[in-house]
Amino acid sequence: MATMTVWKFESASGAENALELLERLQKEALVQVDDAAYVYWPEGRRRPKTEQLHSLTGAGALGGSFWGLLFGLIFFVPLLGLAVGAAMGAMAGSMSDVGIDDDFIRDVREKVTPGTSALFVMTSNAVADRVLEQFRSTGASLISTNLSAEQEARLREAFAEPEPV
Image (cartoon, rainbow, N blue to C red; front, side, top):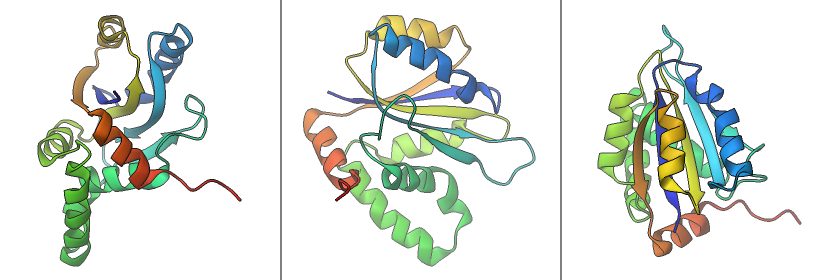
């Protein structure tokens, strides 16, 4: 079963700085990173900046369309016009089918604010207590939602990038 985990950091550079820790944990076989992205929100900016990680995940299990939709729902829908917001709202309904519901989106939106950052990681085979201990030592706070095997399969099916021909 996969877990979608969000680690919030109290600085705009915290999530990027934690990438080395995540890579080390994966090398130590304490977690398998299936896909990941991070958000950093410098003070004074209207909206955050986003980065999908390829260095830890190869091509990534879900692809950019998933991360774009998720970050759009969390950070950009309140800033967009009604028509775009309605379309994103319809897509958000399909995200709840894969375990990412309104409560998760609202929680992340409220906690990741200007001057902070967040690391979004889809993992499997984690040694949870060891991973939690390591990330908590960075001062990060945890927001997560577990995906059932069925939800994980639907998520991968819905957002997987097509294989190059």
